Image 1 (cartoon, rainbow, N blue to C red):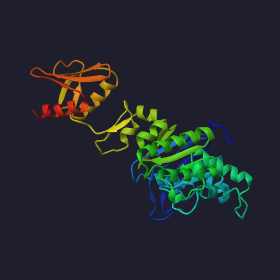
Image 2 (cartoon, rainbow, N blue to C red; image 1 turned 180 degrees about the horizontal axis):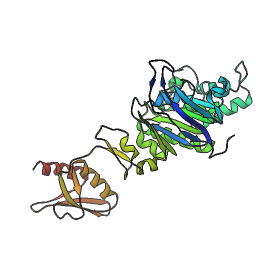
Image 3 (cartoon, rainbow, N blue to C red; image 1 turned 180 degrees about the vertical axis):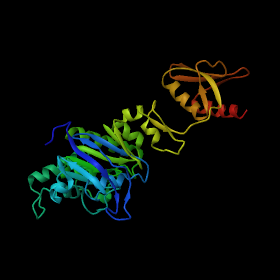
Amino acid sequence: MMKAGTDILNTDSLVVGYNEGTKNEMTLMAPLNLSVRQGEMLALLGPNGAGKSTLLKTLARLHPPVKGNIILSGLKLEQYHNMELARKISFVFTGTASVYNMSVFELVSLGRFPHTNWLGRLDKTDRTIVNRSVDSVGLSHYSGKKIGELSDGEKQRAMIARALAQDTALILLDEPTAFLDLPNRYELIYLLRRLSAENNKSVIFSSHDIHIAIREVDKVWLADQNGIVQGAPEDLALRGAFDNLFAGSELSFDPGEGIFTYPVRTRMIIKLIGEGLDLYWTARALNRLGIRAEPDAVSPSVTIVSEGPDTRWLYESSVVKKQFSDIYNLILYMKEVLKG
């Protein structure tokens, strides 16, 4: 087993695309020199059409590279026999399992195929690994349940358990949170984070859930048609790399909050007085209307008054004073003020 902190995968001037060696050759990215360390969790982010899925499939040898090399545990990818590579890399595709009549245990057992004999029979060790993998993703009570009876989130967990049972050092996942609701998206990314840390697995997943991904990963590959920049999400945020993610769009990355936002035209400046979460969420609501709080502003003003469990929002201008019991009603009134 490789030690934590050493590279498990590197690319050397890798070019991904289609129609290798033909006149119609199409490349999707500039030559890539990337690295993944053992035990690292990495998110591959970028707009549609940037080549994220093609890159993942190329790394798994499911799609041929146009040029360059992929080095896995010190050897070029093409040096591995198919069964050897299956012991090194596992792949979880977009969407959920479609083997509806198979039980969770049976599905996860398929991950043991590189390790069993030619008959594919499971021995005691294999069964222990399958059960442990099922338990790791929180499906131990569903082991005998049919895949078709599971929720989408549970199906995706079963697919990850199959990859764990395959017992590879590198796990690749193409859009694992696609088709999941918001709580399941967070739970799945947290699950990958935990499995990577506890099992010293390197995990690479593509995603459009940028806000979720950058909170949990060790490293980001940020892709566009010009190539990939890589680094810790915090470093990329500080360098302004996320600003180029949606070039040509008004969408911009706010490094202070770690979110993407559309610019809002300032329509009014006010003085906002308060503290804590009440202040934060009031400022957010006002900003949505184009009302910006400035410390040097005098009038109009909004003062947040907290008295025990009760909170009041006091609006005051040169001509009127108003009191509100919540932000919603304050915003309703501010919309009328902006209309003049």
